[in-house]
Length: 173
Image (cartoon, rainbow, N blue to C red; front, side, top):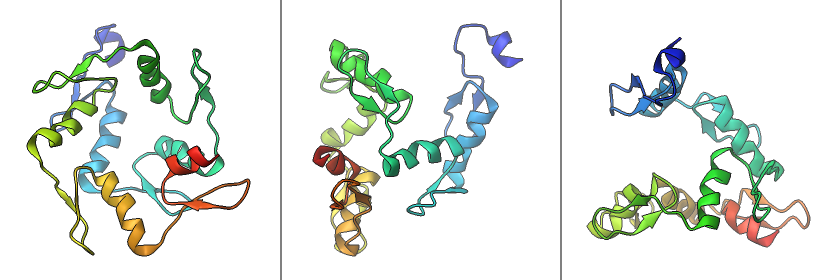
């Protein structure tokens, strides 16, 4: 009903009480709120990683299967999730609509300018508990922590070589 009342404006009526982020549908808000309480009830049977929604788990599982069902119509590059081809099309077109207000650098994805801010502030809020090394992103810290445990969860189905990052496996393949 809210979709029809909203029309085509894309107005995000469902607001998160914790952070103020808006959503088109109440189900999106419910999934988002899992992030604030740290709940990740959907678990990958291959690696044990948890997710806030079944759709995010499905996309993650494509890392293990190598499935990339969505392709770029320009260059043919494959993608595992729905948003990546849309963002990638901006790469092909040169469009960079999301701008850093401090230096004017443009980005293809709306989440990049806030991440980019750490370059200007020097902030590195994610610290390794083993060695004290600090990182600008939590994902960089997670990648780094694999060094300490020797974990290599991304394995080539062709030759069996294992990697710490999915991007390194893709490069190898």
